[in-house]
View 1: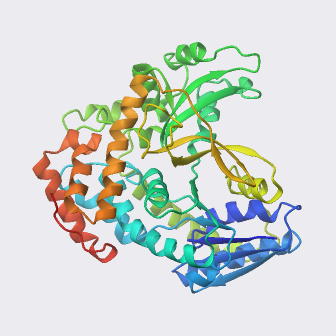
View 2 (view 1 turned 30 degrees about the vertical axis):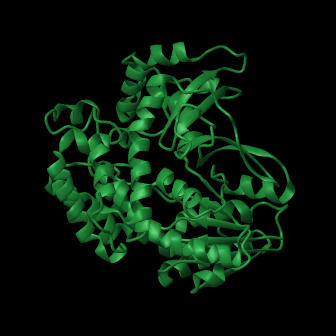
Length: 438
């Protein structure tokens, strides 16, 4: 019926969520799941778990592992990308520890900032290799990119590599439920209507109303300022809504490092005031490793592994294409006028309708000026990183770092240049040669 190739299948829990959704869907039958990962142990773990689930739900799929990525891609209809080049150790640790020596602190470091820039630079050469293989063995496949930095990588795939792709993230579908839960508005969740658009991890809840069409923003903003509602975990987003007028899709720990306002060595009190978790991503990675090691034995021995449907978009997309059942999701695509006051070469996050004929992004109204202006501070970094990676231009990568809102607010340009040089040296095994160019 179809073939799905999962690249980075050693991300076992994520693979279980995405592929599990497919395995429990009875109308999908006689298809192949091709698993590829550079770590054979993690790949086998995923194979064992997914095979047990496949058996539990009627063996409607043929699940195979591949040591050769090109063979895994051969004749694929859908490709899920979930790679992390360099892994937690050494690459992610390096992205945090070297900037820290320069006095630059981060929370997540995977989407923007110096950590996001170098995660992109490590990943792009691998995507270039994958793109060549796709063009040879499965040129019509739909590439579902889940790898961060989402906007940089999805934009690069479309702009420079010509791959049929859409970037998928969790933040949009979680935005309103999290906001309502925080403000004790869960009773209004059913039937609500909203419009969300912007860029990945910095999209805006532009309007929201209940099932009767009543504007909910006045109530949201009133409760946001009420100390009786527990917003301690999400204070940055509420402060941004207070200052800029609109709620953001991504969490406070992410948002804090996309803007120059919160993580400041000259104002250490802000860290405590806004509950900003510095070095949060390394903490999460280490906890995930501990959790997986504890869970691994139990889950691998479970021959009747059950799956609860996730909120990932992959299944909806596959069904929309296979059965021509249109579905509307939020996706990351190159801006072709979809948001008229953002650049056409930016990667934007907008509603997209998907059917058998492809991806159809929706045309949106212009963003409020302050929202577009804030998006541009991130887009500037994304575009320069993409162009610098394409040209192998080290000077352009430094310029991207100069313009990064958080990095530029903490360090001088000379310090930033030295930091960029240090990270190029530290990550040299993952990077092609770069030149200093005007």
